[in-house]
Amino acid sequence: MSDDWPIEMSVSEYDALRREGRSHCLLDVREPAEVAASRIEGSLHIPMRSLPERLAELPDDQPIVVMCHLGGRSLQVVQWLRTQGRDQTTSLAGGIAAWAQEIDPSVGAA
Image (cartoon, rainbow, N blue to C red):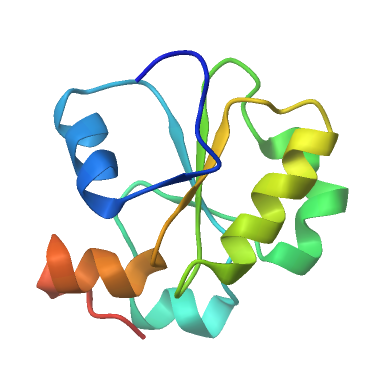
């Protein structure tokens, strides 16, 4: 993937990025109860509503892949992050539900 990050990436593209060992931050913007039910190992959890006051917690030296349950919230967050100057951000299309269905059923999709 080039320095031009698409607004969304598929779970198969994200799986390839992980397998290649490419540096990135996986930002999970779901609510705490959702994360307690299922999560992708290594993700940074900051609920969507808390992001404005916790923006400084995001790394600025690596791309950010944003995920939620189905992809709607993460797409909104990516659009907002890009207005904050975070151009290397992308939404995980289909969210953890697509990840669980297509890549890793062990994470569940709650």
